[in-house]
Image (cartoon, rainbow, N blue to C red; front, side, top):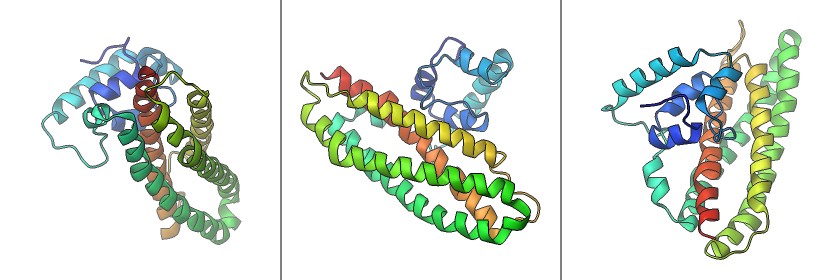
Length: 232
């Protein structure tokens, strides 16, 4: 049973299906994973009693429904040691997000050219925000793969600390802020009237990317980093 005084990351660990509902209401369970549910709901002016009642009822109904591939297998991830969890993050999230970034990069430029006349107010800021997010993520991946993750694999059973966790959390926050701006810029990924198939595909791919980034950041902030720091 979910209550007001549970942290968001505690809820996701216990009820991974809550991710879909949090996404629908733009509740930040990744960068804001340590926030209490009550505080997160207040920030979004959502009545906590009504929301928690609905959340518990939905989760109860879904309890016996097989989970889709997009639902985090938190129990399995929590059993992994640091090296295995790092490999999972790179194989699952870095690979998928690189592919989506490449696909979206083509689409956002195509849609910008095709719809500039009527939708420049949306597409010009979106182009800039996506460019910033792409740069942030690509540099973040390189830092993790070439520096931080090898260091963590080598030192997770020791007392050494190079401050990498704090640096990565700050980079996650930066990506999270860009994601919030992209969500607002796209009106929650709602294609305007007259949008072509490429416009629809662009928003679909952006939404897919952002949902994966949320799972990615949650896995690092709430599973990998506590496990790494607990082993030192």
